[in-house]
Length: 255
Image 1 (cartoon, rainbow, N blue to C red):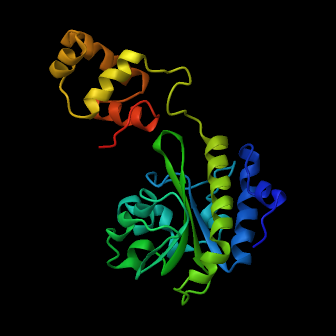
Image 2: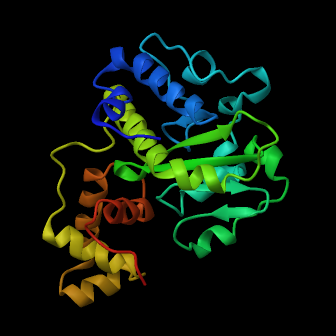
């Protein structure tokens, strides 16, 4: 598969009017490799990418019929080993009932349950491109063999995996940018030095009292800083505040 600026731009979306054209280009790229693409802009959302008129791309462009309506499965983000793997891997991989195959070892993938793989993954084998986006959103594009009996994808992966990665990421990332109507965080939100310091201690399990003693501030002041941080990050509780702060690079959750 030959990559070019023109072919990459063909799957790039600048605005809603480009979605259908870019989807059709991605579809043709997949078909040329004997595959059918299945895009998801957010593995935690049962909604699937649509064009400017609201038409479902999986059905109307990528040709998934009523037997494979994976986008109607509201539990696919929890049940499918494909989406589970996207939480632990950022590079393209391929998978079948016998296991995951990556260019670099990833021990997290070996712990994923592959029982009843075909039923849960709704495919016998696939090349999967995880797409990690801002604010912790994860998208994905899986490339599934047109031949239902083809379950060994090592050769196709070695030949096309990197190209699929570029095409898949370009399509999903530009789709989210063009079609996203609600920004996850206000653009002007920025945590203060004190807010970050409080969250850093909270991240390792310190209580408000303990943080106040460490910082030499009152417990009320600590609560004030953590509350302000939660408001800025649009978080609903302390745990989510810490998590979002880590996603944005303010603190580390590494142990």
